[in-house]
Amino acid sequence: MFLYAPILVLVVMSFNSGDSAYTYEGFSLEWYGELAGDERIMSGVVNTLIVATGSTVIATVLGTMLAVGLARHSRSKTLDALALMPAVLPDLVLAIGLLLFYGLIQLTLGLYSAVLAHALFSMAFVAAVVRTRLTGADTSLEEASRDLGAGPFTTFMKITLPQLAPGIVAGALLAFTLSLDEFVIAYFTIGNHEQTLPIVIYSMIRFGVTPKINALAAILLLVSFTAVIAGQRMTKIGERMPRAQD
Amino acid sequence: MKDKPEARPVSLSRGRRLGAFVFLAPGLAYLVVLLLVPLALVLSYTVFQRGRFGGVIYEFTWENFERLFDSLYLRVLVDSLEMAGLATLIALLLGYPTAYLIARLPRKWKTIALVAIVLPFWTNFIIRVYAWIILLSPEGLINGWLQAFGLGPYELLYNRGAVVLGLLYSYLPLMVLPLYASIEKLDPQLREASANLGASAFTTFRKVTLPLTVPGVFTGCLFVFVPSFGNFVIPEMLGGGKSAMVGNLIRTEFLSARDWPFGSALALALIAVLLVLLVVQAWVTRRA
Image 1 (spheres, helix red, strand yellow):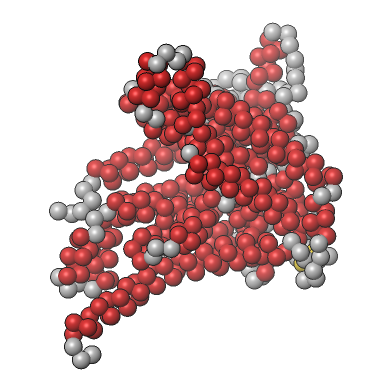
Image 2 (tube, chains in turn green, orange; image 1 turned 135 degrees about the vertical axis):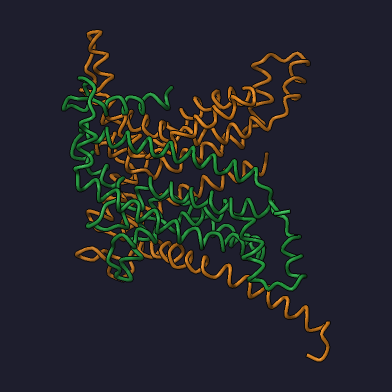
């Protein structure tokens, strides 16, 4: 109840025909129409997608390799902890660290600096998800492949990677969702010229509450719910798939 | 190279080391450059002086730490501890019974209840906080209802209570999950044994259930306290700037005042508090 009532109120208010964000006057979709015409919101959507896609690609590739490397080639607890660190540290600390670093190397802030920043914490989550799958995985197939004369590269591509695929997909989905909603790190690392959608909403709210924000919020809630349920489905399908292709 | 049986293990281990390098190097390099170097920068900036137009002058000083103990900043630190602590306490009081009930549900309902608890957590954080502005503001819904009964309007928004409520609402799921995990693990036979030996339900809870779930309690508290303590969005949106927390100070030092060294010192204070809590948590878990 406590968790859902505020969200529900928000959705109801988004269909308000009046000009106030607070008092409900009648059903209307006009605020949804307004959204599509708002250039700032639309560019926010595009930026958010760019940052999420870019960081997910980097995080998925690096995170998967890191997971394989840590599980198969290292017994170092320190490295394990290091790989998890971006997920555990407060976002504000990561954000200011990156801001100082970008300042030091005099990198002009923009979309790419936010992509690199998001990839940092997403990588930790991808590595963690892929690792849970690796620890349960059967290594005999990899050994068989090596015994039959396949090189390490062929073995990785043909045996390890397909076995890991559901974990990698789940990790990538997680990374994408996290990036879509992330505010603090993006706010610090994206600079003054670009904005992701959470930053757009944040600055809109600072200037006052409007029914337009309600409509935007309602759409985003719908997207998040759909993404989470889709993710759940994917994990279930992944679990039902046999671990080894026999 | 003379005989094969000897050469083979050597080349294999070299292959393994090469494999380790190929897999680990890119990710680790990324972590070193974008995590360790930035953290080292935060740490080192705490002892430098601020530049006139932002940036830093690389001259050693303890000034930033001295400023931390200025009553103004100390006040904010204590306030943050209080607000985050209160939110954590209420989350525990609400979260424990919830987790306990979920753990007792039949299997099918358990999954549904858990998804329901986690789902809001996956929606945009800013939007969840924003929803409370709509509810609490002077023209908002709650005041509207109260007015129907001839009450109010009350100042519900822009005070410390609103901040605590926002923190509680945002991070409650993080309390329920670890609690649920530790209650679920409990062997029901222990409770039965306690009841058979004549203990009342309350005594059983106090002497059996509660002590065995202490690690879950601490993990949950940590999960709620950490993001609450370093938060700047909720105090700004619901506290109206009057109820500032450490996060707000850090944000201001970095983005408006552009005093990076002092901002770094504040961040270090934040990390120090969290580290102490982590050590306590590790100690409790190990003892249990």
